[in-house]
Length: 531
Image 1 (cartoon, helix red, strand yellow):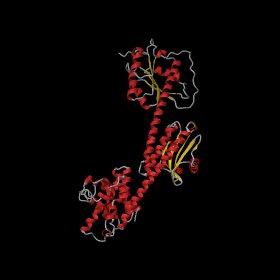
Image 2: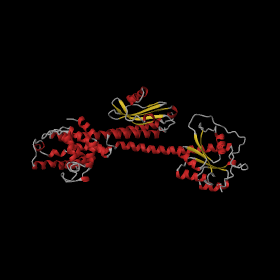
Image 3: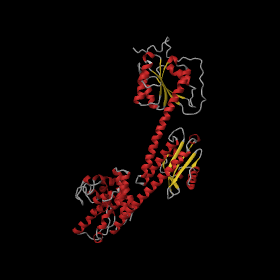
Image 4: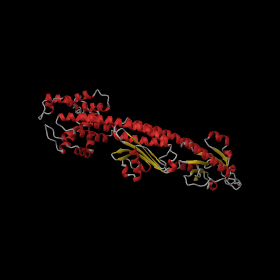
């Protein structure tokens, strides 16, 4: 029989809170988010009395928000719904003699919440002896109900909230350090990233996270009402690459379409004067690279949130960001120069065989689109776009008489023409650069056939690198779509029928399927870069 069956009897008043004529000092009420309090007890009167005592309680200008559970099961459900509960006033004996103690284990070991302050209240201390409970369970206070007067409850609440607040500050500091680490990693990663849009976006996100860490502002908080974005200059406007608050929905939009005139003027003045602007309700940090391209961080909000930000620390932060931004710019310049050289070399090669430079651009764009639909990453798709420009670079070693012969090649001439794959691999294969190594593989293998009948090695299936398989169909599609010295361009239906016929023979069947899935995009590219 449950030993709590007579808990609410007329003769047993052990569960009742005893009132003495004590009037606690109540702090003036201020509008602020409340402290969350969970009362767990199967006696309705305990809930009523506790709420009555604490109804006008405030601490640091914050009142109490009450949550009520009448069993351990109900308490678990409430804890799932409200993860910011600061204090639990917990009875021991409810649906079972140790319901409260089991709830403590659930909170600390299952939910893994070390922050909530748990105050054990019991009317039957014999069922939960103080010494064993304190040793065996992670609770923060233990009270018998007949000793918990309104004044003592008030004091317990104050001390518990101070402990809770201290723990949460420690956790905030830990999170700030973690955010700081993440922000630094993103910025460092940005300088090593090859492709422009991704590296700029990564840089912008890193700046925003790093700023939040250093400023002490919780820019994701519902209470501070702080909004901010990180943006890159594009001509006379700025493109938002990372944002929080009201700007989180405006990524990739231009600031002129998002901001009001006041905000735009603040940013414009800072960039024009090449200086940071720090006021009571906003600030603008700007950095510019050696070419005058600017990156801005704009944050605004209520004065109470911004006034305590350490301006000197953020100035140092901004100086470091300036160095990172310049390094990113220089890295991109190197990559862009490398890309232009590769495209130029590809165009020179095609010009020798009286083909336009648009051929290499189209093949690269086709390959990028197919690669993304195949499931390759953005980095890989951009890589094949550039590397595919050199798929026929080996033609520099083929005599003009063969390259530009208007009639069918002889068997001997055809064998010489096939040498361009090996020549291309020999020219590029010694490089340790990722782009040129990829280009070498494409040049060597883009004439291999899926069924093993291609050249120069007779590779088949997955033995052929995926970049080469994708470039192969892109090259054939563009070649058949264009006039050549030895034949006129085919019409589209002829081309599509040929590609279908070569599925599983010349081409990877999966890539043929993707070719037709992406055909509308491919045709747009063909029109955009028409000869």
